[in-house]
Length: 190
Image (cartoon, rainbow, N blue to C red; front, side):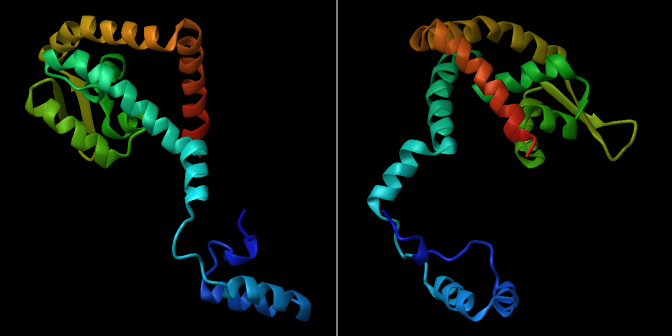
């Protein structure tokens, strides 16, 4: 177990420290100064790293994401799509025409990542990115070629979905989908 006194309070700049120290009584100043003057550790101990690895929501979600993506990417590869591209085509089938900003919000991606992911789809003629009525807004839509690619990829996606559900089991897969929707709602609102 680590000693909390060794770790400075995060988020304090030197200016904040000086102001905060000036408002403390003499006893509090001594404790505060000790805490703030302690240097952060130069290395994270193995036990703490192991706890992070087992309990971090982000790391756990990323591992699950990569495991699932391997199943979906493998199934969609013969169609010339990656799972992330298939997901964008599905979103566009439902939302299009849609602004880049709205598509980014709906897919919980930052605009830069979305633009980078749309580029190969646009080059392949699967999506169209064009100025909207307001020339500052770029609108994204699924082309006829993109709709055909999505329809051709659907059976492969369905196979991947069946495989993933089989590996997870019916109860866990149903629960997981519901929990992931709830997690996105909670986390994306931050």
